[in-house]
Image (cartoon, rainbow, N blue to C red; front, side, top):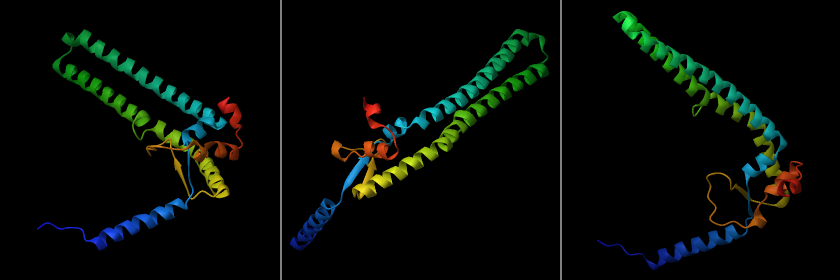
Amino acid sequence: MKKSLTPAFVLFVGMLMFSSGQALAQQKIGYVDSEFILRAMPEYQTIQQQVDRMAQTWQQELDDMRVDVDEQFREYQARELLYTNDERLNRRQDIVRAEETLERLRVKYFGPEGDIFLQQEQLMRPLQEKIFQAINEVATTEGYDYVFDSSGEFLFMFKREQFNLSTSVLRELGIDVESIRG
């Protein structure tokens, strides 16, 4: 049985859309580019350098371990015929354990929830909180109801530059906007 829309239902939906459209028109919406703001902060470069140094140190440790494992393997291949069956088995197990240790350490340092990610998150948190406070201050002062972040996964199909609050937030943070753009 085919159901049809009643005129009363269509009228109700139309009124609902009209009233919500008027409510939306009364609200003030702006956006920021938090990545732009973050990169403009002097502290960001310092933090990024710290994270890069940690990453280089850990990568060097992994590279050194890789050289050791490769050397163990080359030595095993060169002497394989001289080993007894038990010695061969023990050497192979040692190499496999060394490979596994290397991989566990790589994941610990650079995995999705690894130490480098945690360190960066921990070091960036104060900056992000500072940005958030500045955004709140600008939004409150200028009377915005909503402020979106255009640098994340939120997709803007269209945005007017006049509603971009990024430079206002940078000024609130005490950063010279002209030196960034110029």
